[in-house]
Image (cartoon, rainbow, N blue to C red; front, side, top):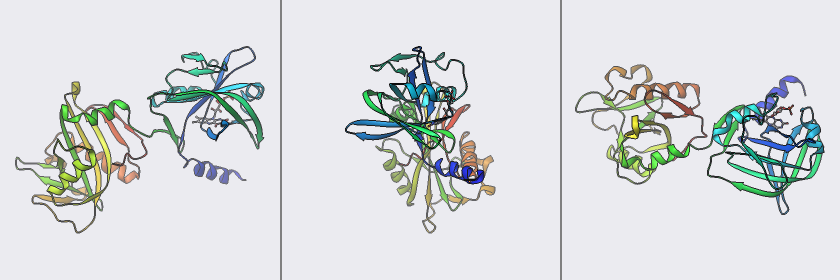
Length: 313
Ligand SMILES: Cc1cc2nc3c(=O)[nH]c(=O)nc-3n(C[C@H](O)[C@H](O)[C@H](O)COP(=O)(O)O)c2cc1C
């Protein structure tokens, strides 16, 4: 395969969303060693087998070739730094992590989403990699969310638990739910009685994210599709939270009184009814242009975009 096709192949394989693991063992001096791997997969339930592929060129290949056991540490969303550190040439990758040996002696790293402690079952040379097949001796999961990996970037497949809990308990604080309605790249805004434009808003009290949006849009007589969470903005001291969803509408739906669709160039940014709405709409347009949406989680001043695989509702 020439180098351009190898590059293509990497990109094609990168479309396969995986988790991230750190595979660990003890070397001949009982020193913990490990490397980052996303080639982990389950193989068999009876007997319980898993595998991971290790490059034969890796510095640790001789150690794993000799090893009689290894542990698979399935990293959590808080462990991106550990993933990077175990993929780099570092003198002591274990220097900054807390770990403990499990039944086979292999090190299990604290704070993982789950771990599996395995005895070596088989090693198979396959091309430039060695397939390490392990028989699971012990395993445990935690409540932490797993870290994801997709097209060479980390991603999360769900929001952090505290954000999910904030969404769930939004009625116990002052909350507002805005809905970005997109009709072929034009956004729906509604003129407010007190002046200024706003996106449609859902009333509090309706149980469930989908029902809440449906109830709100029914009030306007509009049916919307593809409802996806777009941002969760927490006011200071957890006293306020504003949640935005994005969705699409088909041409031909009725236009409610005071409502109009605005093309990106015509959006009245200086006449919006709420201070934070402008930045929400700007990010919407930017991400739509870029063809990749994330979910903003943070407060009005700082936050980050979770690249999660669409949290459809
Ligand atoms: C997300 C991610 C996934 C990786 N998956 C693998 C893998 O499955 N197998 C592998 O041999 N290397 C994989 N690597 C690269 C190794 O982690 C890296 O080459 C290794 O730590 C090199 O260390 P060593 O030469 O000291 O053994 C991955 C790296 C990253 C960042």
